[in-house]
Length: 102
Image 1 (cartoon, rainbow, N blue to C red):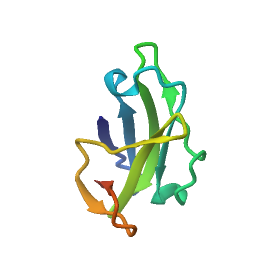
Image 2: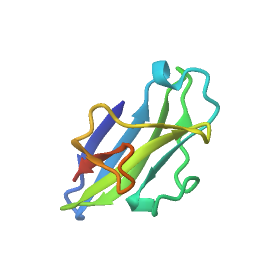
Image 3: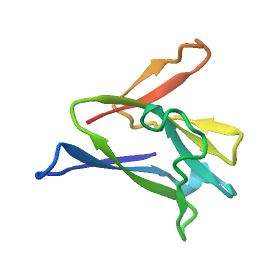
Image 4: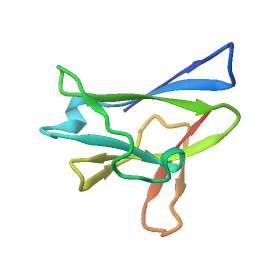
């Protein structure tokens, strides 16, 4: 998984690149980034499929916060970011959410 951060000097924002590598995407047709920054809306933040089969999206996030997120692949498979800053058990207690700290 890819989570890259670029802090802006002019604003309290961080451009965060989220990515799913081609090995994990397999033959996926679509992928979305879902998290508390988009109110867990499963279609609000679609990811772009790249030529190499991976998926990527860049999101501007307000600095000084932690954001929970997961990847949704083909509308039915949830994945976490292996290189997230940390993870936390969901309120449902059956899985974990990835966390990015900006």
